[in-house]
Amino acid sequence: MTTVPLGAPCVEKCPEKYDLYQPAGSALHRQIAADELREEPAIVEQALEQMRDWIAKNPAIHTCRTDASFLLRFLRVRKFSHLAACETLERYLVSRQRFPAWYSKLDTAEPWVQVMIDSEFVVPLGRDELGRVVFLVRYANLDIDRFEVTDQIRFFTMVFETICHDELNQIAGLVCVFDETNVPMRAFAQWSLTDIKNYIDCVTKALPLRVKEVHVVNLPLFGAAVGEWIMSCCSEKLRSRLKCYRSMDEFAGKCNLLSLMPKEYYGGKQEAMDLKRQLRESLDRCRNIILALDDMKVDEKRCLLVKSQTKPGGDEGMIGSFRKLDVD
Image (tube, rainbow, N blue to C red; front, side, top):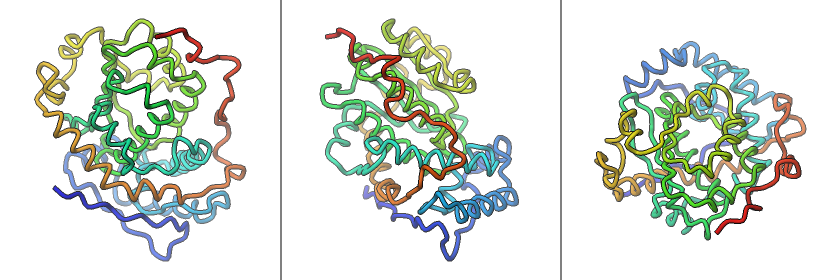
């Protein structure tokens, strides 16, 4: 199957013409949008107009996408409060410039990306019965000798951008399963606490993605301290959506997701090769869109809605680094 890449979107902040809003093609997702997000044509059109006007008149923003698909990411995650959506967009633009090693020049065609896909570090599992997209993350599959924290974040960002591009994911959100079976301590030791804090801030305050559930299975005892630090950086709402399981048996008994898992999991029904191919096709299709995000520019010093974000290296002296651990 040939995957046709999508074209790079326009980043003019005041284009001659704006595209029109189109409701989601899925009846299930249209219902979710109405019930959970207050998404109705009149509300959407007004919010898009307000947000586009704010972008056009904002001196801090030099270039930015204004197409409906892009702006709806932010409006949906903030349930069509256009002021809250503008704040999230501003944080998104600032984060991308503040952490260029994480967010710039993300080319999904680079050879290392295929290595990541083949390792099955991150695997898309499709949609659950509630229409939410489900992903499986397995750190035991990651070559930590080759891929440092920056590489991991860059790959996560590519995946997140493909998720955000799909309007069905904007509406129903994401479910993530972290299988921590056989994860070495060195995988945790790669991440400094400053990296964790900065990245969690970016994900929770600037990424326009509805995280509906996070399932963590087989977290080793030495990972508990890292897990506690991660949770301390998250909102109460996100903490309430985290569920931990001592074993895959417990996960299988309490969750309705096992049939989506790869066949190597008992009860799983999907072929790993098919799942890897689907991820490859999604990344290929969104390559130009992801690269074009670099064309959006903002003057951070003039951003009035971003009141305080942790800057790189802010807490390193106080909280130290897990890289100092003596591990094999």
